[in-house]
Structure formats: C-alpha cells, structure tokens
Image (tube, rainbow, N blue to C red; front, side, top):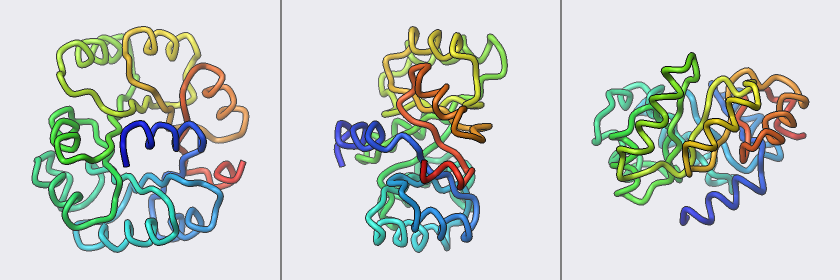
Length: 193
C-alpha cells in the first residue's frame, strides 16, 4: 500500500481501533473500523494477530514498542514485521525505527506524548533534523486543546492523528474539528460511530 493510499484510507475511516487484548481484537474485527492498531502480543503471536486482521480485509499497524520480543528498538524488529507478518506498518516512539520501516516499504506512525512545552520543541527539532518523516504523527493525549493541535500542525508537514483519552463522540468530533486526520481509541463504543 502506498503512502497516498494509506493516508486516503485513514482520512476515509477517521476512527481507528486500538486493541490491547484478544477480546478487543475480536470486537474490532466485527466492527466498522478499517484500521486496527495492535498494542499487545509478542514475537510468537503477532503473525497470527496480523493475519486475522488482513483476513478480515482490514489494515493492521503494529506498535513495536509494546510487542514482547520486538520492543528492543532495533532495526531487526522492523525486518521481522516485514518478513513474518501481514502488517501494513508500524507505530513507534523511535525515529530510527521509522527510518528502517520506511526503507522496507512499511507505513509508519510516530507517537509523541505531549507533556509540556519541551515535548513541543522536540517535535519541531525532529521534524527539522530527520531526513525521513513518518506517514503520520500521533499525538497523545488525543483529548488535547485545539490550540496545541494547531501549533503542532504549524511546525510539521505530516498529517496527525490523536490518541489517548478519546472516550466519547464529543472527543472524536473535537479532535477532528481541530485539524487531525483521525483518532485512535480503545473505547469500543466509539469504533462504530
């Protein structure tokens, strides 16, 4: 899947299911969501998890930082995802992993935790100094003031999604109206909005 196709899919499906266990995965597979962020598993189970998602005709993105045996921030983890899973891409907080994933043709999401003004400065520095940019930036928490979202949009040229603390329809609408492309959430009642 090309970057353009991926971004179009995200834009057309602005609620992304984030799953943290098998029960959540089963519910996501039977929901209206088209994109699933995998936030659990290990090196032995992740191939099966991604296969279930692709067999359901949905896109899987593996959060490498949370997968046992792959969360060591090494480029071999990305190679493993490319070679042994059906995932379309990865999620991480590590820039070096983004570069390797892009090199291997995987779609990429770089997560940023917005804790304070230093976090905002780091986003700006990373944007300026990294030759390879992610396909998407995910900001957490997603239930953040629109002023901050607009500030980030002004310093990066990468589409954004919002995740974390998205707990009701109002949060989804607020984030989308603030300028993000989509939201990711573990709240199942939002998946079929």
